[in-house]
Length: 150
Image (cartoon, rainbow, N blue to C red; front, side):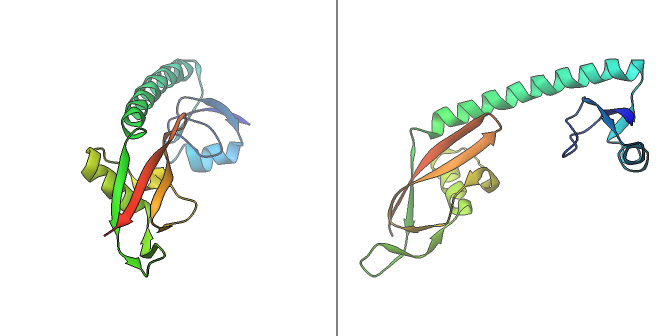
């Protein structure tokens, strides 16, 4: 086992600045050549502490920004107009996360990545629907979407 300091987040291993024990070959052949890790020494461990501190500060800023967006979007109702088929309120097509992200941007001025929006399935009916938004590991909230006839 080799003790290394991660210079980037590595899935299944750890986050930037973490000191981890990993297999010798994985460190020597994969992480170190790609610049994702450094073999740990006394000086490097001090540098790792600084990396963790900066990561925590950045994480705090991102969480605060996500909470501010949540405070704006939770009380808002996003209105989408869609074509319907027949009189039963079924949509011609469906509303996807990309459609919701575009509507949020035009109605509130807040740009959301469609990958942060989570729908169990696309919206195919008129009415009020809840769309989950996950902007940060600690910040998840619903956005109310009202689908009306175009």
